[in-house]
Length: 297
Image 1 (cartoon, one colour):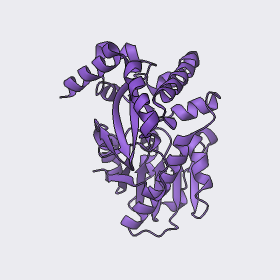
Image 2: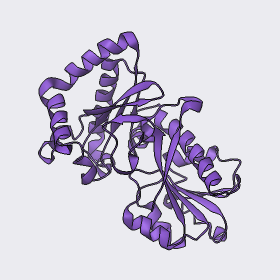
Image 3: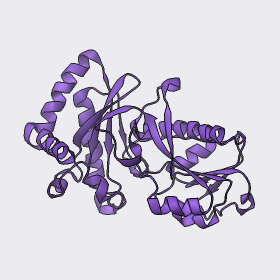
């Protein structure tokens, strides 16, 4: 079935013509206004890449968004696109031209389908913002709202007090700085390699929550300091590996992954993201936005 889907994606984008399909969608959407967003994601690994494309065709979509699916959140639809470049490609200085073209192409798609917004996955918004390629970061606002809701849910699930100390891995980062500004009611600590912020070891043995909004490897760097009453949460794409899950469980900590926002997607997002869409793909729908969390075992 996965190979049939990849063949469908290939025919849709390469042989029928992506822009032709998008123009038809835009013609309908201009009248009925049912498509709200255009979302561009990228693979966290080769395993994720091969979920959407044949290996021999990956070079066609290195920086060109390919239409791979649709999703529905709170009565509105979004279009899912993917590129095959990886995170390490985004931080290479020689690729700034490619990133600019990616934004330009995504804007063109947004205009073709008459969508209200565009959004990008993972570290892309931060990279684009730092390089002054974009000025608006809708993804961050939704992510922060989702993280706050997820923290509240996890505290309630574990019968922890609402003022439980919060440790933020990546507190100096693009999302982290903004999140910390909205945690003023809590005792919070920023842990970030860039600023040499040390781990708050005085909390060891006490009830606390640690949330990773840094990079996918950050949790593993600190797992040796974890303890029984620490709740670990991951917002970073992708979800923790089984090795990381095992290491955290060995320390006695509980581990939750923020799946994203409840929505129907076709096809479904792979692995731990099934049943929802990543926070960066969602839009702020107020009280209707339901954040999904998954306990990892």
